[in-house]
Length: 394
Picture 1 (tube, rainbow, N blue to C red):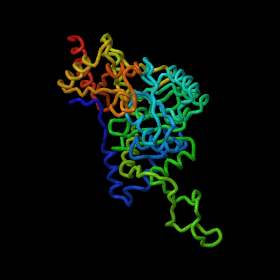
Picture 2: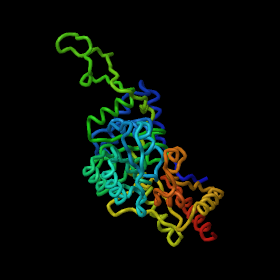
Picture 3: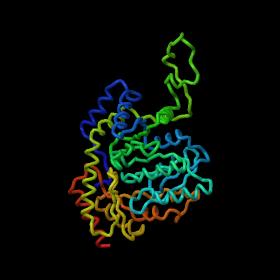
Picture 4: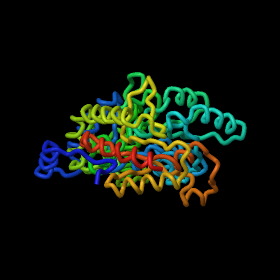
């Protein structure tokens, strides 16, 4: 089987993990801060907070931005369910903004129109979560301009986009957002096994997210609300003193996972360059087929976490036949994504077909083809030839 995605682990990664297993700390040690600092430096962000998953990071970011019951969060239907679920975990309401037919990211035109209606109706969102689908950066500067106009906060879901850039600005710099969330799941750009990270330029947001990931507890004397018993003028608090100031979670990343991520980060540019090279090969090999190929805006560098094509004029039955045929050939074709608003849970909240037509059309016609750094060109040739044969014979 040629999978749609796969991690790339080498001997240096293994040795980095083994070194932690032989060290004093398996968790809450020095490797997690080193990993945070390294990712922040790569993304040109001031602060980074590591989590056990991007899902946890999204949840903590929403709480740090004071998303509460009755508030509203908007995201896109063309994403994994975690981009919306983070709001529901805070008791907030969820709504969606349709995607752009060219980029498959949040449509700025649709967002602006929806904001105008919401302003009139008194239903403006508190938080908006644009998603860098497949590693393609969103038109983030335009979305940020709308956030300044309408007063909402921005969390970039960049789970697909470490190593991507827009106008030369690395995704994760938070130049055009409050928080950016990354994922280190095995199929992503780099992996920690499971893991995620929240980046921000706001020190208070970083401190709040760091407390939320560890039970709402702080040991920082500068943040104590109730001073411990005095030990004399100018004496520090007892070293064992701590305070729980928030209702937090155990969302911590271990040093074992961070060691893998820190080692993988050394090859970030290699991974992203290889993904782009393979995507360019697909673009050439798939020309002339009844497909819509992914586009990269001139201002963007994509991380190409996914290589997604759409069948021209196809419905779900045609896509099902093609994907099934590819899988029978040993090619792990997948679908990203089935629209979130049509999942049973969100249907239970009142969402229905026809509300977000472009995302629904995407969900009916999209096929994710294998793309990962270890994909060999001969394997890629096999994928393209099989797809061409199935489409030619359809």
